[in-house]
Structures are given as C-alpha cells and as structure tokens.
Image 1 (cartoon, rainbow, N blue to C red):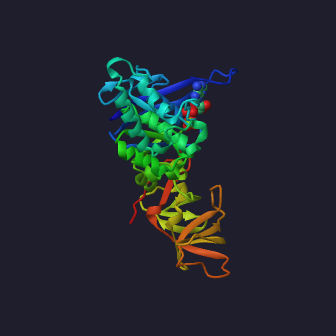
Image 2: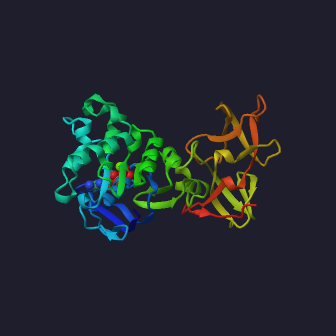
Image 3: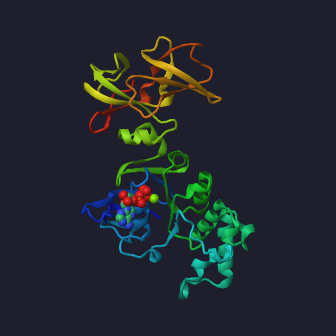
Length: 361
Ligand code: ADP
Ligand code: MG
C-alpha cells in the first residue's frame, strides 16, 4: 500500500505552562512512501519521529495536512479503521494472556462479517507466530519471556490482522535489524520504523528519512544519502566513525585547511566553509598535501584507524582516517600526510550549513 504524506504538520501547546510557544513536532512533512518498502525514520531524540509515526497511525490528528493510503484519504479516520499494525517501544502485551491469546486478541475484537471463524483465527495466529519464530512459545505468558521474544509477540499481534501499513517505534532495542528486514520481506507490508540508530537503519532500509527539529532534512536510499548529504547535519548524522569536520576556506578553486591547499574544488565560490571528510576519504601519502598530527593507530583487523589532531578540526572528537591495514604510518612518526578522495569530501556553507557543490574530477 502506497502511503502519501501531504504537508503534514503537528503543533503541540508548550508543556511549559508559563510559555505560550507551540512546539512544531512535525513541520510540513511531504513524502510518497512506495508500496511494499521498508522506510527508516531517523533523527535525534525529540526530532518528531514518534509524532510522525503516530500521525500515520491515526493515534494523533494533524494540525494541518493530509494522509492517503493508496487513493483513500485516511486523515480523519481513527486508527482501527485505517488498517495499521502498531508496535510501540513498550510492548504493551497483556500480561495475564498467553502468547497465543495476545496474538489472537485483535482478531477476537473484529465484529460481524470481518470476524474470522475459530479455525481461521487459529490458522492466522500460527502463521503470524511462525513469521516471528515464536511458534514454540505459544502457551507462555509475557513475564516468562525475554525482551526480544516479547517484541516478536508484539509484532505478531500487529500483523495478524494483515494491516495495510506496519508502524514500529524503536523496535531495534531488543530485536536485530535483520529480523525487521526479514519480517517485512516475508509479509511485503509497507513498513515505517523509527530509530535513533543510524547504522542499523542504513543497513536494512529501502529508504531513510532524516529529521531534525520536526523538519525533514533528506529522504533517499541509504547509500545515496550517505554519499550525497544535503547539509552538515545529515553528513554528521550518518556514518561510523562519524565524518570529520574542518573549519576551511575556499580560495581560487582550492580548499584550504589551515595554510595547506588540500584539494581542488572547482566551481566552489571563495569563502569560509565547513569541510566534511569521510573517514574512508583519506589516503596515506607521504607526498600528500594535507598534514595532520598523528596521535595513535587503532587496529580494526582488515583496516586501521589513524587517529589525528589538527588545529582546524571542528568536530567533537579526534580525526579518524580509515586506511587499509596494509598501509601504516611510519613507526614513531609525529605527523602523517594525506591525499583526499574528492568524492568523500563535502563542503558546507559556513552560515546556512547547506551543501556547496564542486566539480569532482
Ligand atoms: P522523537 O520520537 O523523535 O524523540 P517526538 O515525536 O516524541 O520525538 O517529539 C517531538 C517534539 O514534540 C518534542 O519536542 C516533544 O517534546 C514534543 N511533543 C511530543 N508529544 C507531545 C505532546 N503530547 N505534548 C506536547 N509536546 C509534545
Ligand atoms: Mg520517539
């Protein structure tokens, strides 16, 4: 089921009674979610992820904007009439019911023609249980299971009604990302999940949505967003180790970091910039143009992490360059020199922090 979010906005009155300011939890969200895809909604705590999910579910009503499931305008519909399956951070299983009874509960709530026969209910409960691999725990109570098992039950309960859309809020705390991917593939249900864990979201999502302060920053395939972030925030949010950020300067088509011209950046206008360099964008090169102070080498097996300092480092931590373990800085070296891979270097406007493009040769 395709899901269309149109100018979706949610404002809350301030929780601080003394202030009249509203919180714009979701601000003008536009997205056409393709049918049958897995979408990861990510961003720091408080950026509006849960609010966006709750708007899609119908648990809360938008201040303005519309939501469509296929061609149906569902904006005014309550959750039970939208055909959504919901899994919350707290699993909210019924503690006094067995796994079987928990999963069956939504089916027993169906009325009239919608209500399946007893046999059909049993069949669907077992099908859902098999999907999440808990068919051998059917007579247990929630208190007798691990967090991950309880989360599986919650997912089974959410899919047993064959929802049009599956919505998961922070499901990764107790469940592997690959499990979410597999369950989504097996069911083919359009799924939106919320997470603050960029690494896991990147690894399983067909598309990711990066949010900040209620505003969608970028939507795209994980690799595309990683390879071409629209602003400094997105570049910093994705990637482990994180991108290295330097306070730089463009002069005459060259990027300067400190006094060194470290890269040709044809097409970029003169002026101060934030220069983001992915850890894998450095090549150890004794004749390279970019000199950093070597502080350590971390062994990671196939690769090493060359840890450096630089007076123009604008990031929170040390500079990290990921280099193949076949190359190492010379023993006892105090400095290292690098050549940069231009497609791993991003420039951002010093004030707006928006991306500045240059010609990558
Ligand atoms: P996330 O899930 O990304 O952590 P939320 O969607 O829960 O973020 O919250 C987004 C913003 O909206 C936060 O500033 C939060 O304090 C505010 N907010 C969420 N729900 C309410 C509410 N019911 N009343 C007032 N403010 C709220
Ligand atoms: Mg949340």
